[in-house]
Length: 328
Image 1 (spheres, rainbow, N blue to C red):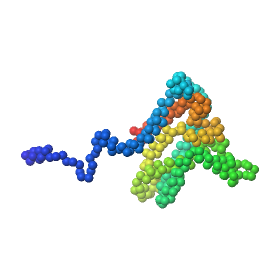
Image 2 (cartoon, rainbow, N blue to C red):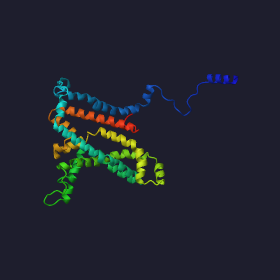
Image 3 (spheres, rainbow, N blue to C red):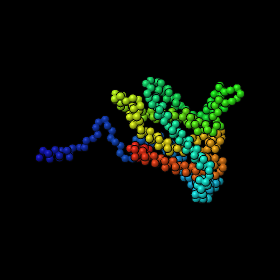
Image 4 (cartoon, helix red, strand yellow):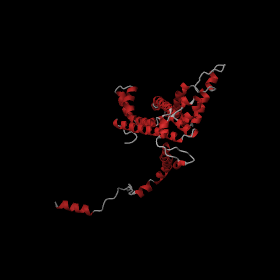
């Protein structure tokens, strides 16, 4: 018993042990953390300012939807009209036609565009030669950095009425082998094809990063058990990358009413507003061309509310499925 008391007294009087040699003590306090992460915070500052000014700050402009906005009077000087702009908007048949075009085009993009990056990523992931994989990856990723003006011009020069294909394979009497531009039935398929050509590589990079994190031992074990390529995909690959797929799908649902403003604006006059009008172009022409700023702001606010509801609902469904989603 006395030995135990002496040991306790010795331990109490012994100096506190410092951190092991070769390890730095953890910085304490906000000032220490600021000194430690100052360079990273400075790198983040431009991006944070961009979102604060052009995204969150711009949200205060939604008050225009409740006013008869006149640019010369400003927001404060414009009279308040309440929900009159929304009544005008919902009573306009052109708005509902634009909303229908937006939803149908977005549906085609989700069905035909969303799975292609995953399929291309799996194809590239199965290529054993690294140089071939890097080359194909760079080729399919490059169009993402090309502006829509160049993309539309390229498609016009290839499949337009006076384009390359009609020039090579067209008849001598001037008849067109391919008649795409100006054909109302070809508008939405053309928009999807252009989107696939331009942005398929962007999604491929994300899925490739997810596929690289899948344990190869799982594929080997499944192959030993006799699982074919389809069963390995269904039982190994898909469960491993399901969080990424759900995350991208939720983000895509949030963009369901954004079907490519610049892309469609460049080709709207060719196909006609009855065919090519979407919500974004409806907002642009009603505001800039017609001067109906309040109605245009009401349409934009309505679109934003619908997008927010879709994101929250999809994220809630992801939680019910046991996934993290965009946020917890």
